[in-house]
Image (cartoon, rainbow, N blue to C red; front, side, top):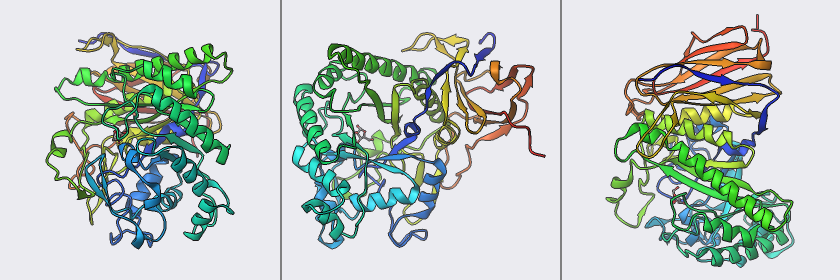
Length: 507
Ligand code: AHR
């Protein structure tokens, strides 16, 4: 039985940080049907002349995805980027050892940059530090970013791309701490290679920003020694260290599952501590930022993936069909990222289409929005501006792996330009509504624009191609203001978006 209510206190004088919009980034890997059948499907009724599905592009634009990581993921650690440029008919078909699939290379760097432009996103490019190293990485920077007049830049021009791609953010490999990674390395081996690769890449283009690989998750045996050693090698050469995490409700313990954003929170705090330890050790003035460039729920598809025959072209791998409760955890993870907006400057919901994704497609058929699409959409669209130090007082519970889990987690973002404030709140209580009182402080006098709610009586409810609107947000209209206090009712197991504006209602 939950006792009491949740109280939130806001004040415009107490700000945490501006939101770097890149925390609403996502990820497209050459994996499963993310590229082929996902963003790209020539012959699909909605495909444009370049073969990109317009139904998918429209949804990505609606999400306002600012940056998309590419081409992997585990895939990048065996990738020869040269295979994916130049005339398509000359491109080799390769075995992708990471996902035991066959890669046709019909889409490569230039096509992906064209797609990113189509959807209004920047590219976060990863280089292969598994089977390759400094030479391939610096050549790719030259190919992408050097204007012309050198071998690799002129090759790009000869491929039909006269203007440089100007890719700003580059990842130095992927999950190099993981034994599953092609070319897995010790922290010292990786740290040295990453530092030397970073130097060469920045000598080609001094304006790029670099992300060193952190741990694949908080439970790796090498965490957080990995961060300490890698940062010792790379601190002065990179701007970000990466973080990855995926959660799942494998044993059906939903209260424990929904508490897993507390693990993400601990993970961020420890990586910040490791960064600041190295900063102090090096007597550096530079602050290291975090790129949480893979995060999501991932477990539904694990068993099905074992049945897929090896060396299939674009197999249906990692096709998690998400439930209402998955959307709740995704919402709680978004709140956690926002609460660390002072250090987390980039993050990528992994991934974007078909592969553990908010957008699903059928080959030759429709595209639809999964449950997790909605918290991601709301945060990306309404969560831009300044994160307020949001004081939350909530009833708590204990679960198998966590103590003192607040039923209500919340964070507010103030968009000073638009004159509005948005409160994102999740109620983890599965059976009871929780009354929310929000003290508005200097925001007294604002009006409620809307209170959007994502919930469903069935926590396992999903959206499918046959029933794409089973779990969708609705507006509730009982949220009210009483002086400087906002009163709302947070329904059981719900994701809430309460939008306030300083402007009077039109008309
Ligand atoms: O996103 C799926 C996979 O998860 C990525 O390829 C890898 O980096 C991580 O283990």
